[in-house]
Length: 263
Image 1: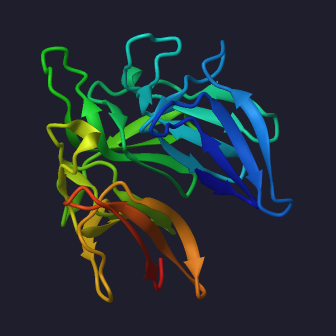
Image 2: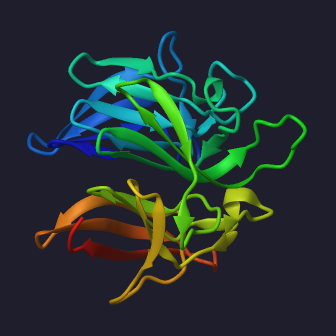
């Protein structure tokens, strides 16, 4: 789910019993839901789970995830970005990154953000583009798409670089991408188990491509799969994070905010 102005947008997903094939908005002023589009229809995106969402003033973006069966009867991961034009009420697919970058992986649970006009894909749980590599894995690849040039770029980051991971909380503040926690090694039971989780926070400067650790205050414990967003709290912008899965495989209901003084 992502916020654009005074509206929230929710796409696909699943609960304990079923997977969903619809796209809705919620008007926080009028306090009402609105059905927008059906998924799995010709010319539009497939329904999916484990996808990531991002936004700018005019669009809702959906990246990656796993199909629920729709047009592809055998579930697969995606590597493309679906863009919903809010004013026009129409979906388009952005250029396939795999056609420009040989190493671009199909992914779920990736970091996905719009930073100063460019759309970034950070890490995630991946299916290799190499047909000889059979096992899925945690990725540490970072790429961005420039809507002006319609070009994808893969970058090499440095500094206090986090290990490969997925399903981490993330936010954008100015030129910085903030991430916290996530899964660094998958569980043999897949998403039914906790896997190996992290209690680390990192910030990526998207101009210098340097990572650095952050922390301080009442730091959250180890977790992944949290709900998260970029937020402003007490006049400061940062990462707002709620709940998540703990190493015990229990869920938590804690709410944390990491504030950035300047960006």
